[in-house]
Amino acid sequence: MRISFDIDDTLICGPSTPTEQYVPWWARWRYTERLRSGTRELMNELTQRGCQIWIYTSSDRPAHYLKSWFRSMGIPVEGVINQTRHEQKVGLRGPSKYPPAFQIDLHIDDSLGVAMEGMDHQFAVLVISPED
Image (cartoon, rainbow, N blue to C red):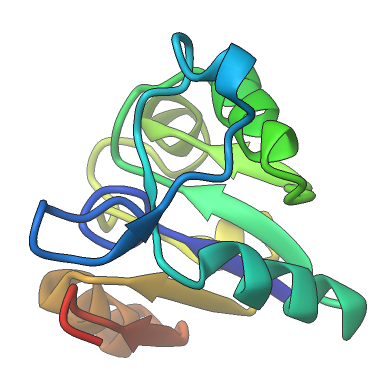
């Protein structure tokens, strides 16, 4: 199973959400953002169960930056879809995210709008909030 995660407000949340710093001290100058508490354990467990972890973000963070950031924390990320890659594949008129275009089985996001797009375009979305 291929599972994608949104970044902003899903894996990286505001100051009121518990976070953990997994990045080695010597790389923190480059990777300053902190992940939501429990992210590494969840992703590693999913990987052990045979799932592929992908990142699907509406930001234009470079794919190589995101892959190396997750790698620095010991999280294997198989692929990254940023806004540029999304627009190249889906176009400007499609939904804000469209996981089926990348053979993604489940997308995890904080946006109710993405969940509505999932219903409209027949793809699975699990909505989580910073409080979850």
